[in-house]
Amino acid sequence: MDQPSARTPRLRGADVGIPPRALDFRHSPDLPRRLVADNITATMFLVVLSGIFPPGEDFFVRSVNRFKDRVTDPRQRAQVAGFTGQEVIHSREHDRLNDVFRARDIDVDLPERAVAAGLWLLGRLPARHQLVCTAMMEHFTAVLAEELLGENTFRELIHEDLAELWLWHALEELEHKSVTYDVYDLIGNRRLERLLSEPLIVATILPPIIASWVRLMATERAWRSPGDVQSGLRLLFGQGGLLRNVLGRMPEFLRADFHPANHDTSALEAAWRERLFGAEGTLNDQLRHRTS
Image 1 (cartoon, helix red, strand yellow):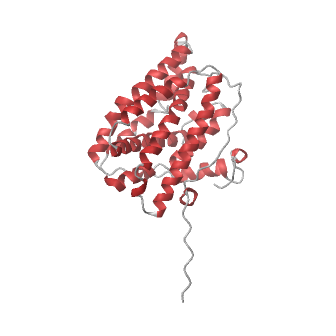
Image 2 (cartoon, rainbow, N blue to C red):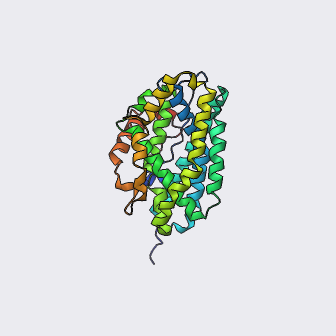
């Protein structure tokens, strides 16, 4: 009689190139208030981003996992598991960073509450609409990550105590950039829904981001230094600015033939994996378990 075959081990996120890395970032309680190029305007933009990531990533994970039972391919199931693990850790580490901001009396709770309200509105939509909006926002974070890790010099202006967190986060955004969209493909990709996702996000998420940013700049009295505002906006939106190319690439999501993998970032990811987690990786000492 034939012996029963050994059960095939279940694939994990690490097996499909999306390893949840348990890091433990240590932030100095004496961080300066100006964390980007000695500029309060750009600094407050990073504070807003950090504030919105915990509620945003929770929304992303819930949007994808509502359709987890529809994912039957073992490799895709592992990709969803890896995506979920990475996003949960991102949320935790940004919560810890936000605690440092709170200790410095920087109102990071303002953008968190404001964006949570916008996400609540998106959460009133049908589940598949929430998923396509998540895919659109994941496109934004992936392009932002590519810009941060690519030729843009903005990352060199971030205070060294924060830079490693943003570089790690950016790498993992690229590693899982296709997961949400692939789940959306699985349940039936409708271009009209993708076309509608942009105005939905612009109406619900963009206003609280902008309002929170303006309020934080006012609280930090950035307006007393017009040069600070001008320099900060130039760092973000000017020629070669961090967000200039990002915003220019948002319409890609609306193309009939769009897929995140159409824009190949595998070489960039490999270079940064080696730089951060290779044999001489700069983040190895902050990994709780070296499984990635």
